[in-house]
Length: 75
Image (cartoon, rainbow, N blue to C red; front, side):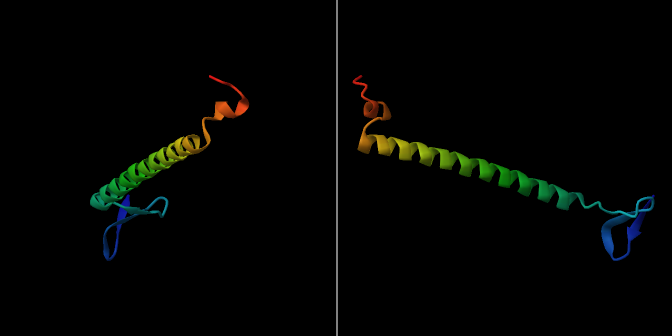
C-alpha cells in the first residue's frame, strides 16, 4: 500500500519497504528528455572529435607527405 507523504503531492511511501516513491510523471518525462538530449550531444561531440582527428591527419600528410612515402615505397 502507498501512503501519501504529507506536504508533497507526488510523493508516496511504500508501506512494506519504507521507500519514498515519486509519482510525478511530468517530471520523469522531462528528466528522460534531458537525458536523451545529453546523449545526442555527447554523440555529436564524439563525431566532431573524430572529424578533427581526421583533419589533423590529412593536414600532417599534406605537410609531410603520406606515411607510406617515409618507408621508401615509391608508388
